[in-house]
Image (cartoon, rainbow, N blue to C red; front, side):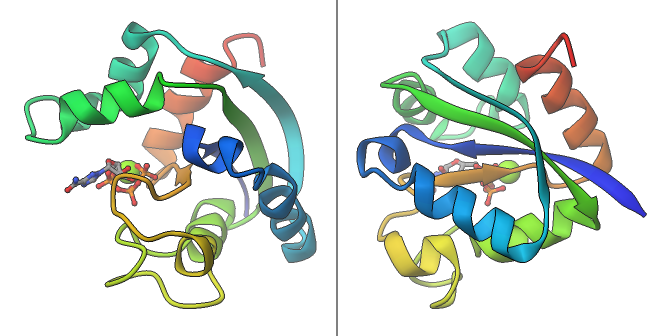
Length: 136
Ligand code: RTP
Ligand code: MG
């Protein structure tokens, strides 16, 4: 079944010039990129995006990080796109969870600075795509 997911290259990934690397992996997997934008988001948008983590100890530093520079946002489409993209990204902790061969496993060292985001369910995907691409 065709699905859509919201992909972000976070500010660390953009500043490390990994946009091309990430998009190449999405394309090599066979997924379609149906929308793409580069912008720096305000605190309100970041807080809505990560609303599920409101109140957690890392929430404030996460918002500071996500708003610290340009973020690449993309809507990616294909069969089982949500799980397929999370497989390409790798686990949240780039060392303990992500395996080599994944984006986080190949390029990441710290949990907060883990380079990319992907929606974790169809509900999150619908909510996040509406937030990042209201006109899509
Ligand atoms: P994401 O939402 O960004 O795709 O990452 P995820 O599903 O793999 O992980 P999630 O639990 O949703 O956490 C969201 C982001 O918050 C930062 N984080 N920092 N310091 C910490 O313990 C900690 N835990 C999470 C990471 O940037 C993580 O991707
Ligand atoms: Mg998440």
